[in-house]
Length: 380
Ligand SMILES: [Zn+2]
Image (cartoon, rainbow, N blue to C red; front, side):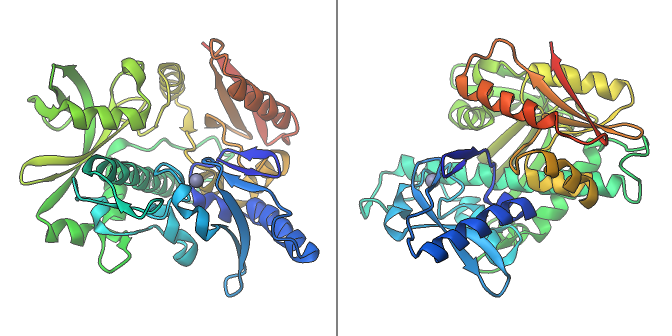
């Protein structure tokens, strides 16, 4: 999340600041700063409430947000402005580049704490890397999912009623391709770093698991026997995926890195079912997604606004963002003949004021959508 002059924008990645709509917001903000000569005139903060400022990259004519040097250490590892984040390098190259291969392997190393300039104990360093790893995987999934959706529907008009869902196998093929291509700052790619370190990246769909005291055992589509995993590693993955108290049951997309037959990185993301790749955030969303798939409807669950731009295609995305705020991301798009349904899955038991306020804002915006779109609120 970022806050610009009191308005909250719910961003999942820093990369989303490169959409035309956000560039316009940053451009205006930058101009106001230049015009007034007061660098604090704009009040811009990240989710950790560290102060940010707008900068202009002349060569690329891009507007970016930067952290004041003294505030650098304030970013939490989960913040998109954290210096070790895979997102950090996007503004330089417009592609995902990771800070170092440590994000993939290193555990238990001592990491310098920028805030106090003292070395921090092992645990915090490890946790920081795991958050960085999880964010990287999220970025790569968003990239692979939107690219494979467009590949599956290449040349098909989004309003033709002939859009198809993405088979899980195809998603996995694209994900591997992206791992093969994603660069590391000091040279090489993720795949090269894995090879050099005798490590493996494994991707599969987890179908069931059982919890024991110190470990869990799980099964996947491709391996029928139980695989064991230390509970400590599992708990961290669960925390990131926000699957509190097993509220969202499998299937999960599973990604892990192993070295010397030991799992060192583990990531899970709930999906609608085992055959079609559709990420879901709750059991309710899963029921709705599966119902739509059974009715032969093509759906897309946008993880970021960057991927919305890509999958709706340029002109339709422009129509969408004419009506809504640049950070608006519905739960699903359903591709029908002559229009695209915009769906919010509403949890009536959720009393969180921030959630309710944002929902109200979004629904007011959806009323302004053109006839290319049709808004539906779904309650289970
Ligand atoms: Zn921050």
